[in-house]
Image: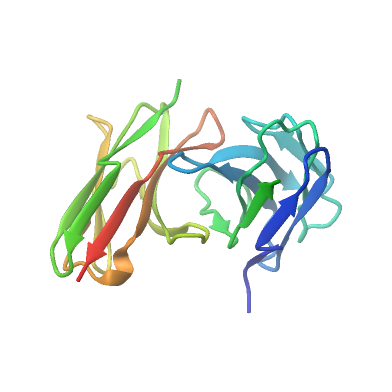
Length: 114
Length: 112
């Protein structure tokens, strides 16, 4: 069963804590992305990676960090520096990271800061 | 600044009726335009992709149109079903930016 998985589906965090969201894909895609979605707003790009061991900041990278040690994995850490982390987080992948490539999305992780 | 604006923000229709969603963009230079369907609490799923030379593309009951001159696209849903209730997102990509600009989406509710 090919696709993108994200875990956990729901995550609760206390203020001041770092938390890591998991994203795994078995599509053999080179590129992976992290987006944040707030109610009534469009997706905003946090980080993206087009190749292992390389990643680029998106539009709202402050307070987030990523790693890309393996082709199939792209975890996102939400640090305590992120002022308003409560949101729905979506991971996506595409074959080569070209603009013509379709992005395939995971089911999302809803993060709530208590 | 590249922008994608969708209208209406939300729409309620009765099952079996047709509807049309709009997307206006200022992204330049234009590479492609995609429509995604996002069910509540789920990730978006691609419905159609259109390049500069295409002005219409269908996927079952979904038909997307593109007018590259006026920078407008529409998504027409025929004979709506309850399962069409979702958010529909327009995404425009630019060669220069190397990434995509997402609209805020139109929330469609289909009632029996």
